[in-house]
Image (cartoon, rainbow, N blue to C red; front, side, top):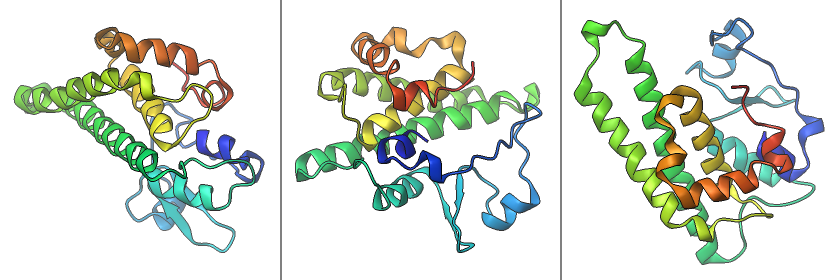
Length: 189
């Protein structure tokens, strides 16, 4: 949705909340649109579906009426794509930890959780080291992905206070989280 705001397409998207009861339950319509039963999924007017956040963001960018989420400069473009890939990987590790945490205690693996947590730790360290290179007024796919990653980590593991381990990243986050692409899409905590 942050990409939709940046590209000027929010009024062209209808959002369907699949968490109305506080628990994600894939509907038959979602499973038909996306056989994986995953969100997000963007159902197009022609009946086709665009699935997976990076692909949806790229699709929205091609329809942009306002701005681009990809820089024109080649070096900046690949830096942003690297940020995107690392943030998405960290989010995946967070999701896997979440799944592990809701399994019956006797089936949970401390080793598995530790491996995923290490990925999160290393990702936050990396983003902290490049925080001075992140945009503060113009946002690309890397910054969008990092914001989503931070918010997801905070929702799933608030007790771990991930930004406290990354002071430069926290300073950047505190500054940009007050701006429209992120205030309008911030998760309810």
